[in-house]
Image (tube, rainbow, N blue to C red; front, top):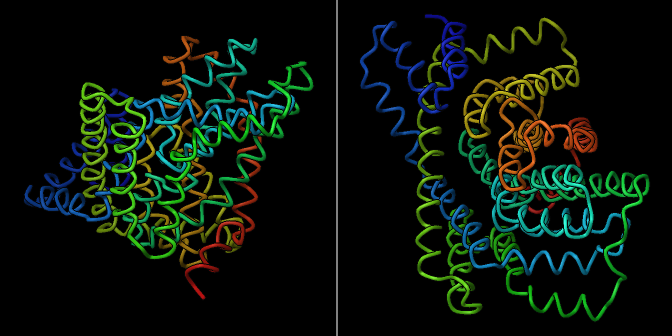
Length: 426
């Protein structure tokens, strides 16, 4: 059974709507049986793939985001962002992006941003007279900032798969995340001027101060996480534990908006989400092992180098492959499968693994905004009661700034490597 047959069986199962973890496992099992290998090989690789201290960060970051949403802390963040940038043309669109930047430092997941903060943002924009399509488009695009600005669940998975410093990956995402935000705000300003969208309110320093004081404790979360990692006070995994504990204390003891019932719901959602992620990681580990055993990376490198030996041309081809995979595959599964294939050729042509991590994750985030998978669009369609087809159409204009940022990051690696080199490599 060749590597091509392995991929054909995987995509056939995906077309049949088999869950991605099961599809990865079944296609890998088929290869193992036909290759005459003992089935225990599959079990060992799956267990070893899950057996990582770093992966403990996943459930705690998920729980931190869930607690922030359930405790009503996201509304404080939204109010603060509104006071900061609501005075611009298309005010609530800018608020949407600003709130996503802040929430990114707490959850690290695009779907968490879209499902939790997105509901608040879309409701506020509707009440202010913005049309649903614009509201959904802005919310969908801004949610992709979450997995780029630290902490980031996809970057944790990438770091584990690529054996790369997660601390470096986290700080590498800061400048790209801010670039995404600025580019989206420029697009919002342009559309708002064209359509005559109003400003939300005049800038008021007193209002900024009052909303800041209400949101100051939640705003400390990203400072604790990123500051602790940069200073070496704790590892990314320990930072995730601190984030979840801090969110729990805010909800239970400080604001007292988190009830035991809500805590139980968040815990169950965390368990469910973590279980699905870990199953994907485990199943993709055996899939990646098969690719490695068949020297898929070397074959892929040979194909690319036969087309061109120019670093930038190869990088564009890699990005095209990632984009196509991202259209059809869930982010965590895509990372787990792509990294063993892409990393060797990237290192061979002189691409820094940290730089590769940032551009691959951003590329996959664009995939979350496009059909047929488009998880963020499905979530927002449910939250906003806007048909999925309209969500797709509404998001299209906001793909333009994201693609521009992706191209800038691809061809100017210093944009993502400046902070890691400054903080870790001196």
